[in-house]
Amino acid sequence: MDLDPQRIPGMSLGELGLLLLKEASGRADARSGDPYIDVQSEAGHCGQEPGVKEAVIESWAWLHAQGLTVIRRESSTQLLVSVTRRGRKALAEGLDWVRRNPFHEA
Image (spheres, rainbow, N blue to C red):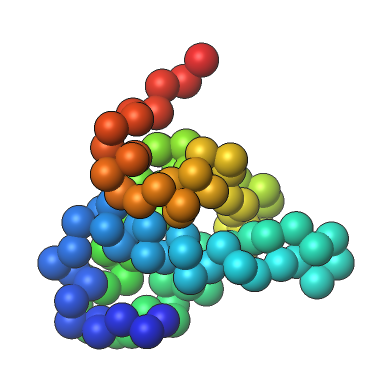
């Protein structure tokens, strides 16, 4: 990730979450071609600075709570998530759009 690990613990969940989502959203599953994000792998690549891994995991949880990602597959070693339609809209519009359009379950 092209982000100073020392900055990560001080970032808001939304700010960090959208950066993570943007960076990871361009990847595709080799078998299906579907976009995916391996959350544990992403957290592990963010550095070992104190508080970094926790901030990254919390930001992934925030993305899911906001309806920006959906769990595709979960196992003891891997958590794969995909970007939702709302997540793609958030990437296009930015964090202010997410704040102005809170997620409400139907």
